[in-house]
Amino acid sequence: MEIREVKIGELVSFTGSETFRRLHPKPITELRAVSQTNNPGANPEHTALIYVTRDNEVLGFVGLLPWKINPSGIPVFANSCWWVDPEKGRGLAMPLLMKAIEKSNASMFLSESTPEIKARLEKTGFFDFSEPIEGVRGFFRFYFAEWAKKRKPEFPGAIPLLTLADAVLNGITAPFRWYFRTSFHKKILNIEEVKKMDAPLKEFIRKYGASDFISKTPEHFEWFQNDPWVVESTKKESWAYPFTHHVKRYELACFVFRKNKEIKAFATISYRDNLARIPYLYLDKQSTLEVIRSIWFILLNRKYDSLVVYHPGIVSYLKKNRAAFLYRKKEIKFSGTTKKLTPFLKEKPVIQDGDGDVIFT
Image 1 (tube, rainbow, N blue to C red):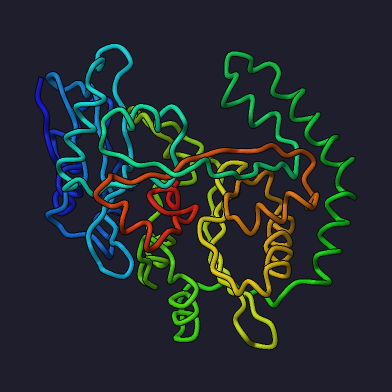
Image 2 (image 1 turned 180 degrees about the vertical axis):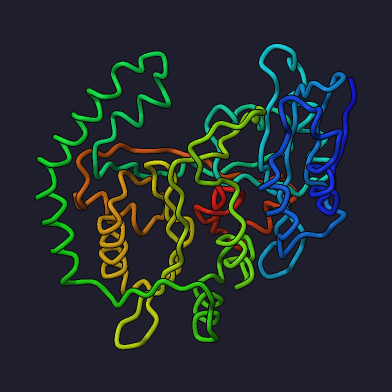
């Protein structure tokens, strides 16, 4: 058994090597390797990947994604992946994580952790976690067939019937969505999709992102759009990778919201295989209601199926309003940092939905 380390500056050559070709399963994809190489905040000497092999078989791996603390610029690392073979990798999960903590100089954070992961990491004595962060998962449209393809592939014969059911149910509920879309359309801000940031938008993000724990520059938002970790494809790879990287539909867009030419909000909206997210949102709180209606107009106009969101302003709104959901349920997550970073998080307490690696996945 052998443990190996790959640095940011080595990722592309690693994925093009004969060593990588022989590995099974793969500990990273070529797409992720290129994306992490283009990270505007990364140092080529930062550790990006640690993996364990027996001959050419990968038994487990853990990934690190470098960021910087706002505004100090101190390096900090998100855990971008953590996997071990359920049989052959037993006993490797915690040693791999401890190695990642060591390589991050004990400067690691998690933007989105489940209760199970939280419990495991707290036992290490290295981490502090937030109180439960409440979110909402809501459904705009029916997609039983797509759900069954992923969760119940052993029943392919049910897909045609479920596809028909989706079409009928979505037809029946179309007036419901039309009502909300037209209602919101009368009360929304001017919406502009942007690829590049001008000086006023940069200043807006700097001002309203002052409490963000993680520093985001205009270059970061261009990186998010240009270097995703997933690709739209219906084919199956000839090699195995434990995490999703081929998807049926993927979008990531940045929007500016204006009123009388004055910027009121900036948001990123992502969509991957039936699920939308709002990874980043900066807004003038006096315009919160108009901003939320504008975002909902985008979601409905693009015919997105569902949404999960943890932004406190939006969650507060959803507690009091139906907002075109056919069904909704409460979601809970935790964010956490190594104890070394706790004082920095207290000074800059906002971890946005997209921080860590969520913006890419």
